[in-house]
Length: 286
Image (cartoon, rainbow, N blue to C red; front, side):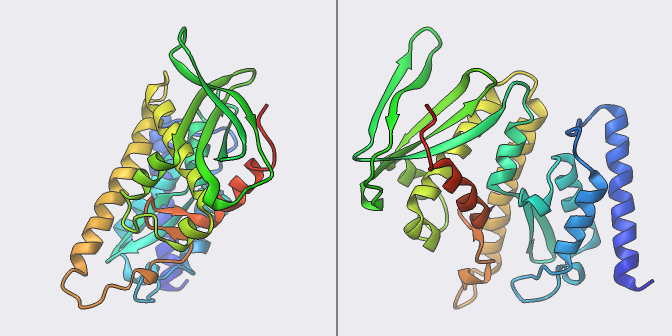
């Protein structure tokens, strides 16, 4: 057995042991259809092909402790990289796990009563009316009929729906100005190729992220999921700041060295987001 194979066995065994201990103590509850072993195997296959920004294999460049912690973080959240729910990126010699857009939806769907999460872009020529239910204190969509003019210049907003079995559990609407304000919080200020070329898809992602974060934080029996969601956001922000400091004294900082399919604003997988949200745009929810 070579060194990398020994490293894999040592790390995977330690992660599986820790997950089993956490399950036995009741500190985590994973989805019934989630296989820790399969997720770890998928993760290691991906890690074998993953490189640092200096083009070094992460399994050699990163510490074993950070590799184990990133895999543990993935498993405790019940995520699988083969389903594009998360991915791995190195910051210096530290490997981290970042949850993707699809991972955020998967976490939200683990809350009791949540069936699905959908998002839609709203254009100037769409028939769209936003209402408010004074009895429940919730926004609601009174009418949405997409028009034929889907020109990006006419994008005026986006909304997200968190769906239950027979009802809409939560509605979140953001105007284009609110969306741009959210993008401006990211390091790319909404100027990445994805934001420019797929503004509607990125707008949908933004409003869904906000909807999921709000719903998770206000729902009963979701403390652990809320902790996962907030922890990932805080960790990503901190790691990006550390990355900036590390390269602050260099003459040129090549942001392109971050993988092309990574949205540096949120640390999510752009390809997965666009694939999912294209499905959402095909028809109105009503």
